Structure formats: structure tokens, C-alpha cells
Length: 261
Image (cartoon, rainbow, N blue to C red; front, side, top):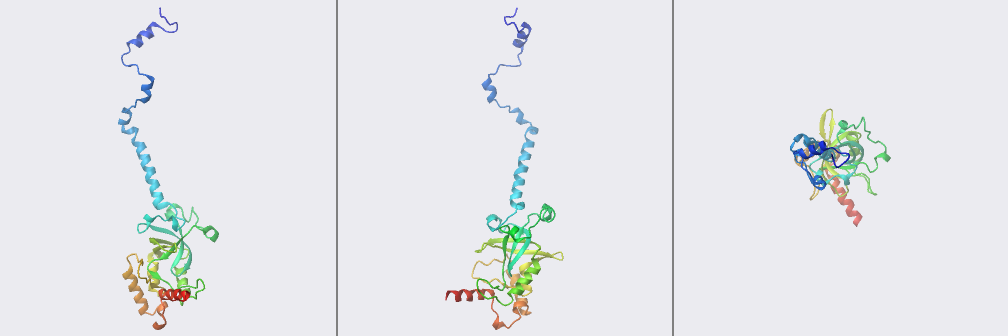
């Protein structure tokens, strides 16, 4: 007769006779790791693949698909390694403009799912000022200074060439005015054109003159040749008498000297 009224001798004997299970304390069972579970690749390979996919996707987004709203948001590692694709929203002078960054272009919905702002209030603090590398256009009227000859022609030419169009800017550095210095490309009639080079060919700018820090993006020889050709043909700013010509650099030097004195 069993000493416990709710048990049976049969159950008690079967428990005693089960040699496949050994008693394990409750504390030990909590700390025990079932390593056999991890030996089977099907139990962990899916987790590794999902984690890797998420990490890689985040890196691609941060490097290529994240919209950059201004110069200060361009990471230093991007210069000379990345290009910026976007929409030209305004042209401020003959050698600079504002770019609304649209990473991925139409593939990521820009122009059909995602709208590019057009109003000034919508664009405020959301564009990147771009300075064309390697060229210098005639100076417009700024800060009480008179405009240079052909400054309005240069501005009109650049506006007609890129305003409202999609461009790609190969970026090099950030200048003292918080602009991104870049070689800019735009498509015209299915051909990709270097905007700065085209300006030089038309006599709408000179090559940039400075003692140091000039950025040509490896295109100095090509730019100098285009300038020389336009000068020989007396195009644009070269159409007047040589003795009356004043380059944008000479103009700025003269203005700075007159203001100091």
C-alpha cells in the first residue's frame, strides 16, 4: 500500500526505474546552455543574414540615399569620394548656384513620388550652395560695389544652362563662404557637359587665378586650353580691347585695395 494517498506504487516504481533522466537542480538548469542548438546552421544563419542585411542597408542609406540639406551636413569623408545629384533651384552669380539634393533621383521617387520644393520659403535652409571649380565669372554688383562688364551676361548664360535642371556635382572641398566647390555636370541633348568648361568655351568666365588653393579637379590643362581658344576668338568677355580687360581676380583685388585705403 503506498504511503502517499494520491500516488501509486506503479508510478513510483517506473520513476525509479527510468535511467535516462538524472536529477538536475533548478539552479543548474537555469545556467546550462544548450550548445547543440547552435551547432545546427539552420538555427542561426537566418539571424546572421537578417542582421547583416540591416547593417549594410543602413550604411548604403547613410552614404548614398540620405538627403543632405546643407553644406554643414556634408561629411568630410565625402569630399573627393562622392558626387551629389540634385535639382538646381537658383543661380546666385555667374559661377555659383543652389542645389536641392535628390539622392537616387527618379529611382527613389524624386519627381513623381517625392516633390522637389519650388517656393523660397520651402527651400530655406534646405539647399547646398555650389561653387563651380576652376573658373571665375565676372562679379555682379555686391555690397555697394559696381558690377563688372559681362556679369549679367554670365549670370544669364548660367541660368539658362542649368536652372531647373538636374545636375551632378563632383565635390572637392568646402570654401571660406561655406560653399561646396565642385565640378558640375548637366545633360544636354543626351550628352553630359562640364558646366565650367562650357562657360570657358563661350567666353563667359576665366580660369580661376590664385596663388594657392585653386581647385580644378584634375582639369586645369583642359580649362586653360578652352580659355585660350575663347580668347583667341574674342568671345564673350574677351570681345573688347585687351588693354581694357580686367579679370575677376584683378577686379576683386582692386576693390579690396580701394576699401582699405
